Image (cartoon, rainbow, N blue to C red):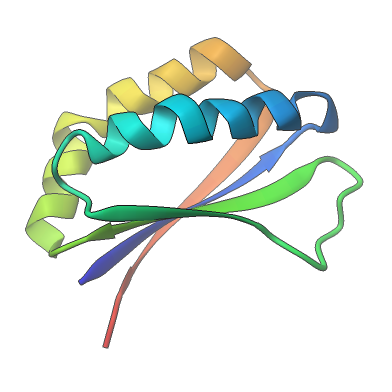
Length: 100
């Protein structure tokens, strides 16, 4: 199983709108690709929140092939939607993990 982790720091003045967008639109869009089975959205604690609030979205994929398909076929459009809506009000760092 693969976990695609996206860590996002969102500016304070956009955080509430961003969380709502994630919960009501973006996560559903990602899951609708059929390449992930679930997603967990978390607020990271004990972080320096001077520049914004940090969140982690963890998408669970059955395997690396599904993840790679998402990255090549779907990720560019998904990222574009986020940038169109929130511009430079967030920064993101992505990583993948394999469960043992």
